[in-house]
Length: 346
Image 1: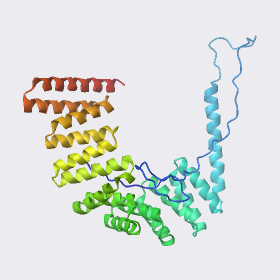
Image 2: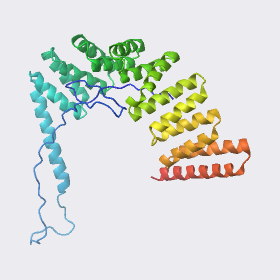
Image 3: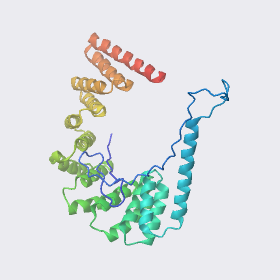
């Protein structure tokens, strides 16, 4: 259970500020300009309060005004998009193209946004905004290989920009280039040893590649300054470190790390289930049952958690012979079945 936290700046394209997800202390990015709604003609449904001599007989067809209104709006939107496309086809102003790309990206049209940003970059190569937007659009549709040369050109122009280098490292990692990504993270840490996001991603990268001692050093450095981490990041670091300790066969310390992870995010059922599983490995059934009960409290409709709790009680019954544990196991199994039935009925 490895939480590889690769963090990519998302959102506004005027500057590629880092997006600190899942950190609670993230710096907010400029959100792309939302596409403005096109004006809708007010359409009034005729009143039938007064009976007329030529009123249609009962059961006759009457207009569906809600359908007509929807069709009218859809028609307006289609014409508006066609007009905008025609204008952009001949546009030569980079700023116009960038603004249109922002709107396209906000509307979920990432491919169109990437094309518009690329055209703007061709018209104005010295302006980094277009290439930043192009990289963000490509990343949003998982085209990391196409984003790499864009980030590289940006770094040639802005070599000291930490956000660009960070995002470049993430893209390298996603493209299966871990050693190149590692060099970029290390460069960020050489420039600023307090860059927590770079250290967190580097630790996760090293852990995934089984460089456990190096990963442990970076996890410990993060935990030595844990107060600077938001609750979500702190929980993830503790959980990652706990997994590393399990890999090193240090089960007791791993359980303590997972306990800290649950403490950092007390409303996260997964964190408590992780603790329950590790406590079960260590043989601390009291801790395991208590953690699983906490998870049940947080997610009472999840049958899998009830099943996990039932398994713990059955193991306790086999270990101690205490019939009360068997009774509790059966109750948990029945609760799991009820929730499975409820879920299937929906």
